[in-house]
Image: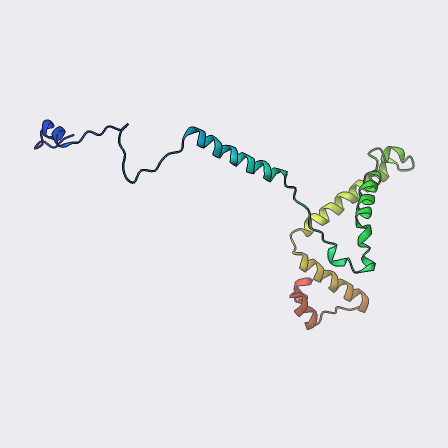
Length: 167
């Protein structure tokens, strides 16, 4: 809306009309044509296709052991191929229990209860840090071997767990 002091005729007289089709400025950027844009798209597609052709190779982790005869680096591929073949053959049959005639229902129930208990114990251990579990295992082994509670300052320094935390 025009201010009341300015009439609509004076506002139109002071404006300049510009023909958009014939307008050019010194700071104009020339736009690419349709053909140039299609050519750029094709170049991008060729680059993408080239990227797809390149296969990523896995790093050779055995190269550092090539001079070590005990590492048997020359047999690594054969060993992995053997593992892959025996993995399929080594799986337990889904019908294993149906072929076990000497296992009765009560024995199956005991086995299932034991497996569930084993899984629950493992689940309960998830709340502890692995370093704490390892320190507790070391503490338990030392107590069993020596016949009494044995946790030195050295053990505490190396594991960062005091004896009270392991009990």
